Structure formats: C-alpha cells, structure tokens
Image 1: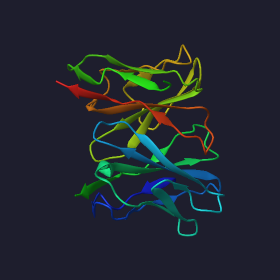
Image 2: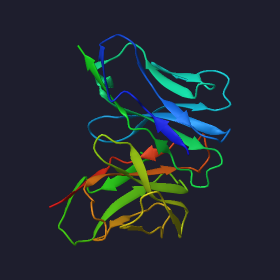
Image 3: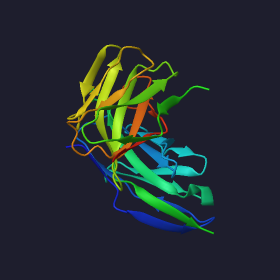
Image 4: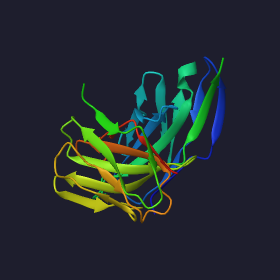
Length: 116
Length: 114
C-alpha cells in the first residue's frame, strides 16, 4: 500500500547550518510526484518543492533541495543556511500518477527548531 | 490575490450539534479536498471533489458530509455522527489531479467539542 514515512519526530539545527529531513515512500505506481510542505504554527501548509519520479535531476528551490534516491525510495529535504523562520513542521507527501482521486498521501511530519 | 479562504478560524461545537466549515477558492481550480489533521500526525483525506456537483469519500468520511454546488465552494459539515471531531481541518484545491500538480491550502479551521 502507498505510504510515506518520516522517522524524525523532531530536529534541532543551529542557525546558518544545513539540515536534512528524511522521507521514505512506498508505492507500486511507476509514476508519482513527491512534495514537501512547511506548516508554521499558524497552521497553513506552504508548498516548498516538488520531485517527479521520472525527473533525472534533484529538484532545487532557493535554499531547499531534494535528495532523491529512487532505488532507495527516499526523498530527503535539505535546507541550507537555516533561518529562525524555518522553525515549523515539515511534511513529505506523495501523489500517484494512477490515482483517480488526486489525493496527497502525507507522512507524520518532522518538527524543526532552529536555534540562534 | 488568488487563494483559498477557510472560515471560521476557530469553531466550538456542543455534543450532538452539526457544524459547517466553509472553504472558498478563487483560483478557478477543479479539484478540491478536505483533510483532517490530529496532533502530531499527518493529514488524512475526508472528502474530495473533482468537478461541480460531484464528490467522493476519502479515507475517513464517516460522520462528515460535503456539497459542491459551485466551483469555488466546498463546505464540510461535521455531523453528530462524528464521534471524535476535535481536530484541525484543512481545505485544499488543485487545478487538476495530475501527479505533478501542486495543492494549495487554506489556513485551516480548528474545531473543538465543548
């Protein structure tokens, strides 16, 4: 069954350092998309970055990059030069290409705290 | 500005009451979704709609109902049959259901049973 696993309930990082948030996924669909969302304490979900299953290169968006290892079914988020405003909950999500719902399947989330 | 508006931000429900959460989008998106988030957990799909006048149950639809009479509106009713409704509810929309299509989210409604 399709599933997203985030094994780190909480992470700390020093301001200006890089941090990696882990995400592994399970699907039998060869076509899928992987998303990372940020949820600050205010509650809204903010889209950060997307990686398609057929993309040859790792996705990057500003300070965010995705370390996509297809054979290992992992899609880790790397945040470079952490800022205090990066403190939030981060969710990895997947949408399967064959899905007739278009629903996103979410992991449990990782709470990131950036220390000054 | 285009986006998704959820209201109210906080909602209190008495036991046995039905309450309706509002979700409006001006993004001209076809697909709309309702998710439930419990503390320390990810989001779970309640209902989704891909087109006006059509909607389907998600993974945890029991005790909830929806309607989609207009493209921009997708209200969620939490009925008295929902035994544990206290949660954070998020509405989302996307232009279609493609695997590479970003979902846009509202700011959420926090529902508490009193």
